[in-house]
Length: 383
Image (cartoon, rainbow, N blue to C red; front, side, top):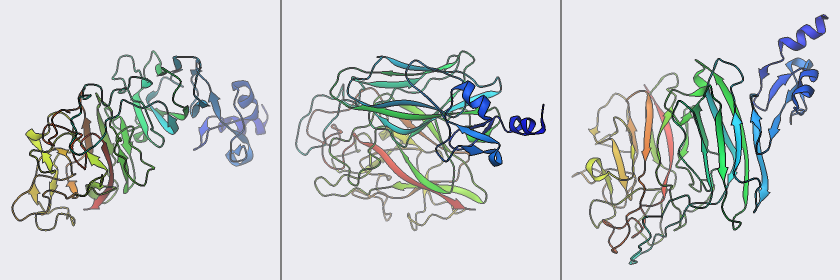
């Protein structure tokens, strides 16, 4: 073998952000295409392979894209992809949704003074669905709707994972472009075991599936998905000992003034946040959640403020009122934790509470509504 070919194959299986770096020969035999960024890698000795596949494909290459162009009648139905390990040392598989738009769930409508009775189906994915199996491990939840920019990570299975779409009806436009990345065992970029989502960096945002993350305002039909139960994890970066969360769009008291947090009912007719036993149906659980009693929006690591409660729900992202402390009705606040590892559990049940026109018995009564889910900013705090 010539020295040139030796160099080429040394780089043959390096992975870039766009694709897999391979020799031109290996690229063509695998069916790859030149990379978007010009095609070269490994200092010009290789080409960047982008593996793009359609429904029914068996995927065993790292950095493969699952693609469906925009259509109202996708075929075949169901559309599935078998994702098999690239090697025996693969433990985690991440799917990044560059584009993900399928039919959404049955929506509720946040209104004032209405008596809605469709609670049993609000948030249910009755038209289209997507999920990822993991034989021998925990599968992903079933999701639908708008999820561009989101991601999920599952344990790799020796029997191959299956990403499957089910479509029902032609009223919606469906389109997806999903990057599949395989992580070797022990690679922290694959996220800790049990984490469906994994975020790195000192700050960012996190949202429930089907949340309109690109919208400038939150509409009154924004609806979170039913039957969600998963863990979201955040890497502890160097020199950081705490993490704080806050709403990306604050809620307010005015009619139609919907913020970016709303899960379940408040503890009384007043539209407040709630915690602990008041959060039994839909909630976020932040282990070790607390706020600084003296200044709730200026959290200091190492200073134990008002130790609060792990479960958070209601119409505002904040705890129920405590005498002399900000965080009563009509106010979102910053909720922080110093408990490591940093993680949040999101849980919703099968039904939304609707019926009588009263906030404490109807999640769709009054603004902010309790049916929307969440979009939160997060920021790690210095030690």
